[in-house]
Each structure stands twice: as structure tokens, then as C-alpha cells.
Image 1 (spheres, rainbow, N blue to C red):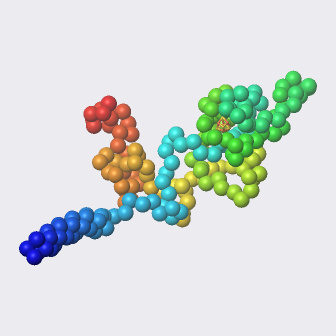
Image 2: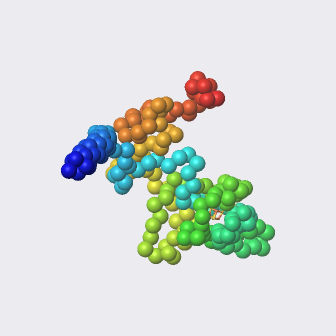
Image 3: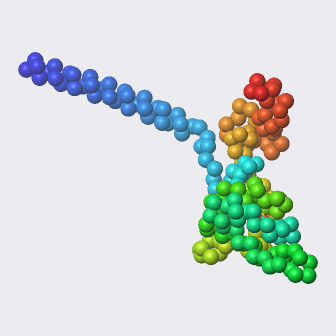
Length: 194
Ligand code: SF4
Ligand code: SF4
């Protein structure tokens, strides 16, 4: 009988202990509910892509000299440079240029090596289509002005972590003119990171 009572006592003690642990865990969980969620509410909020973000490629037809360097440095020889020799001027005449973004890996090699800077990377990453052939951009589509997160009246642009002021971790509510941490070399020296 005594043994049985001891077992019941031990059980009750362990149950109370487990209950306390669960209570402590729930207290931490409820404490997290008091904090502001650090969630970007796409599509009404969008992060501003970084300065070196490799989005859709922009192309300027009138700058291109049809040298085909972009084709040679591309890992899959993707850009299509369609030109013919103009016998009168003895120069290459560019007829057509296209890049298929269904195949492109956005490595930026073509942009890096283009001798006339007619290629550049934009911050545009919303390229989804219902048809894969619509991703094959011709020179006109490539030359279209890119969409900018900061110019969209429907969107609240949010800064990425490295562009926030010093010590700030949450992009919500940061004023647009607040300086980012270490944007100039003297800032880096001041903060001791230089
Ligand atoms: S970004 Fe890279 S994969 Fe895409 S076209 Fe340029 S070199 Fe080719
Ligand atoms: S590297 Fe530049 S200039 Fe040469 S063909 Fe490509 S886009 Fe045109």
C-alpha cells in the first residue's frame, strides 16, 4: 500500500514539473506574440534589391557593335546576335538581338565583358509568364525601362539589412532619408570597421 502511495506521489510530482516546463515554454511563445512580426508583406511591401543585384538584363540597341563578346563569355552562349556585313560601309550591321530569360542564369558575365556597356543588370526580378516563349526577350523588350520598386505607388519599399541605419535590424518604419550604416568610407572609419 505504501509503495503504491509513493508511486502516486512521484507521478504527481513529475506531472507538476512537466506542467511547469510547458508553462515556461508557453510563456516564451506568448512573449514572441508581443513582438512586431518582421515579415515583408509582398506584394504590398517589397524589399529594394541591392545595388549589385542581378535582375533582368537591359540592352541598348544603338550602342551594340555586334562584336559577340557577350556570346563568348556566356556559359551557355545564350545571347543571339544577328548581324550582316554591310558591303557599302564595310561595317557590321546589327539586325536583331535577343536573350532568352528562360535559359539565362543571371550570372552577369555578358554585362561584365561588353566593351560598349550596352548591357546592364536591372533590379527587376518579377519576370514570370504563362508561356516559356514569352521569356525570349527581343531587343525592344530588353530595352524597356525596368520596373522600380520605389516608383510603384502600390508598394511600400523596404530596405534590405545592409542598407539600414547602424543598429537597426527591422526595415519597417525607417524614414527614407535615414543614412545607411557605413555608406561612405569615413563612416566605416568612425564605426571602427575600416
Ligand atoms: S547573364 Fe550570364 S547566362 Fe545570362 S545571358 Fe548573360 S552571360 Fe549568359
Ligand atoms: S558584347 Fe555588347 S557590344 Fe558586343 S555584341 Fe554583345 S551586347 Fe553587343
